[in-house]
Image (cartoon, rainbow, N blue to C red; front, top):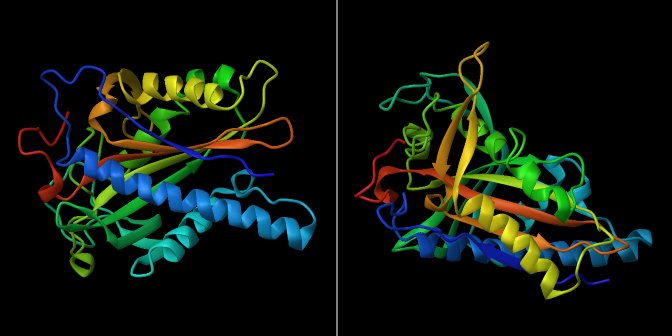
Amino acid sequence: MKVEAQTYRSVMADPSGYGPFFQDQDAIQGSLEGVCKAWATYLQFHRDRTSILFGKQELPWEMIERAIVSTLSAAIIREFPLSVVLEEFVVPRQKPGLDQGSEGNGSKGRCDLWASIPELKVGARDFSFYLEAKRVRMPKTTANLGHYLNTDRGLSRLINDYLKARGEKIRKLSPYRNLKSRVHEHYVIGMMVIPLKHSDGDPKGAALFNEIKEILDTTFGTRRPVFVKGQPGAESSKRYRRMGRFPTVALVLPPDQKQTGMVATLTVFGSTSKFLSGTQNISD
C-alpha cells in the first residue's frame, strides 16, 4: 500500500522585529525539503522491496533510531550521487560555555549523521550538516501529538540534546566549527522521528495532513516554552523561544487503519558563522 508523503515548512507567525537566525532561510528549507523528498522515495522503495522479500512491508520508523537514520543516509546517497555521508562516528566536543575552542579541548561524543551534498546549495555553498536524531518510542496520535511536542520529552528534548555541547545558552554557533580536521561550512540539525498511529477520529487525505500541519505550526512557528536542563544535578528552567527563527522542515507520512505513519522534523539549531544572519545575536 502506498502512503502519500508530504513535506512541511515552518513559517514565523510574527516576523516583525524578529528575523531568522540564519541567512537564506528559504534556501535552507528548500534544501531540507529536497532531502525529505529523497527520503520519502527511498522509504517507499524500502517498503516495496521488503514486501517482496518478506511477504510484509517493513516500516523503518517502527525500529530503533539507528535503523531509521540509516535509511536517511541511503536516501541521500541514492538521490545525490556526489554526496558524502558518514554515520555514527566519534567527534570531539567543545567544553560548554566556550565560544572559542579547538579540537580536543572537550569530551568525545558521537554524531548520528554527517552529510555534504553538493547538488543542494544555500547561496553558493554546498548544503552540509551534522545531524543528531531522536526517535520517540511510543506512537502518538493526532490527538496527543501537539501535547507531546510541548513536553520536556518533545521539542525540549531536541534542544537539550543540542545543548550537551553548548552549555545552558541556546547559541547559534556550531559546536563543530573548530574541528581542525573537518574545516567546512555547515549546519547543525536536530531530527525527531515520531511514529503516528491511526485514530478513529482522524480525517482522511489532505484533511489529515492539514490537521498535522496545524499542530506543527503551533509548535515550530510560534513562541514556545522550552525546558532547558542545567548542569548535572540542577533543575530544568522554563524558557521561551521563537521557534520560527529556527528553520524547520518535516516529512509527514500519514497513518491509516493498517499501518503506522511518521512525522520526522528537522530543525536547524546552529551553523558556522558565515551562515548566521548578520543582524542577529549568536545567543538568546
